Length: 86
Image (tube, helix red, strand yellow):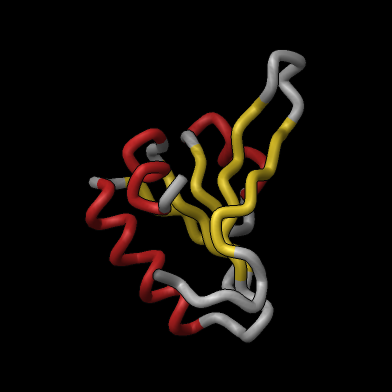
């Protein structure tokens, strides 16, 4: 699934200030309390992701955080370390 498609399904993006970028729903922000968190339209959040990507160290990646039926966090890779943002 593309970043654009996931942004349509989520409401928040979060950034650790170095290399971790997460797409998630607001309910998941309790796990990223020290991160920069941005809400807004999918377009605004995509613009923020692109900005963070440019500022990130070479270890950067993007993951989608969801929860399973047992309320456990599930991390799905959207852009793996070493790949380019498209």
